[in-house]
Length: 284
Image 1 (cartoon, one colour):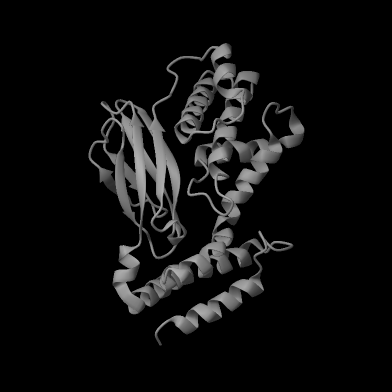
Image 2: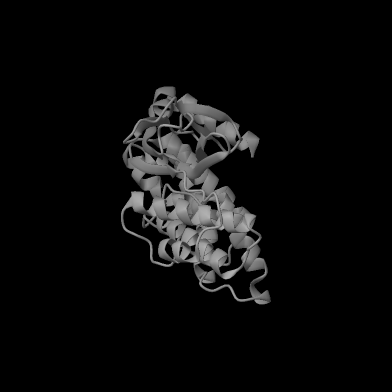
């Protein structure tokens, strides 16, 4: 994989470093509460940390992010002393070239065992429409779930309700686009959903929708393949290195997953043909 990534980087640079390096997307990040929060940081897939903004002001900050030559996922993170933090994964890809993505990082960790009525009020509902409201639901229900785990009530009714709200909010973010959403799956949520699915026959999990849990995990696993749907758009924009990188990763992921049929109409044959054509556009 490392050699493949290196090769794609060489191709991008050979075609024109200015094209690859100029590709960017904009993140508009809101932090709440903003006054006591740390600097905004980003962790990429290789756990390399970098500071994005020293202090996010009230109302948020817009930050231009240089897109990597190879699609990846990175987590945005802020902390509130002494021991609170909020993080959420964002997809960095040429698929989102020139787009503006709104992210809210909220301190919603309950310091004590939350009241059942508060858990039901915040987490027993469908996902709201606005992005800020969806993130409010996500971090509130996540905070309740973690507080209930600390209280020794993991998998109890209130904990399942909090997990359900957390799932509903993340599902909403992950399905905002017909193709691929720039919002990833919270790894803390994923670990709990996978635990539930592994024990599916050992208890009742209502109100958690297990079908939605499976779909959300599947969307995360197949995202690199589905991103190949952006290749024609990128070609139309002249972003050949980005298109080549996305197609190459899609092909490698599809071969690893080895699905029984196409993923959103995308097959290995299609990706191989794409790559042959994209390679023919690269300088020899």
